Amino acid sequence: EAGVTQFPSHSVIEKGQTVTLRCDPISGHDNLYWYRRVMGKEIKFLLHFVKESKQDESGMPNNRFLAERTGGTYSTLKVQPAELEDSGVYFCASSRSSNQPQHFGDGTRLSIL
Amino acid sequence: EDQVTQSPEALRLQEGESSSLNCSYTVSGLRGLFWYRQDPGKGPEFLFTLYSAGEEKEKERLKATLTKKESFLHITAPKPEDSATYLCAVQAGAGANSKLTFGKGITLSVRP
Image 1: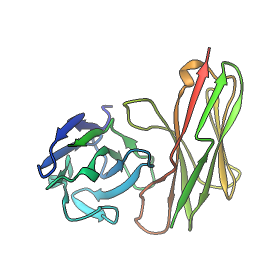
Image 2: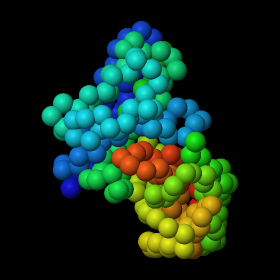
Image 3: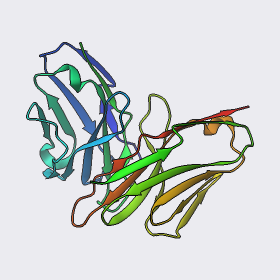
Image 4: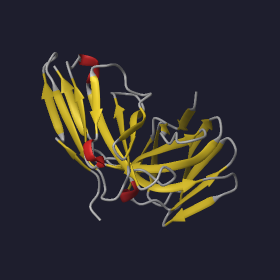
């Protein structure tokens, strides 16, 4: 079974630019989560999809972040415009149901200059 | 607000020297406590889920236990390949809320 796949693995952009991160969950997993780890802090929840619907977006920091999951398969997370404080590692995770363990991708390391 | 505290922040062991990692939590309605292992440049890798106080899970040299306030990850006779960051996370609350709240992690180094 293929794991959670994230693209790109690393992105370096300038402040004010736009970046889109992609996550391909494990096949058959209806639940998809985005998390973020900023330097020196713990991994923090951003949002949760069930199929194509946003179940919980309480962790999204502001309206510069837009997440989509069209068709209930892969998901994208767009940051527009990027700010310095958006730097960090963005992780995606998926699970078959909300009660089962979440399996993580290797993350996208985002650096804003 | 759910809180997870892990201690110590870092732990250095000699190969074969057993020890325990601690995870203390404060939540409203625990649904599950999760242990993950994370290697540098990689995502968290699932190890165990514990659901109720008194529960124990084992996998090779690792054993996880749970009480009403904390969880321990016991490492028996560790090897250098056990070196990694160990993360504890909780899932709490009712309904469809299934987000994980993480601790900062414990970095374990095992010297040969």
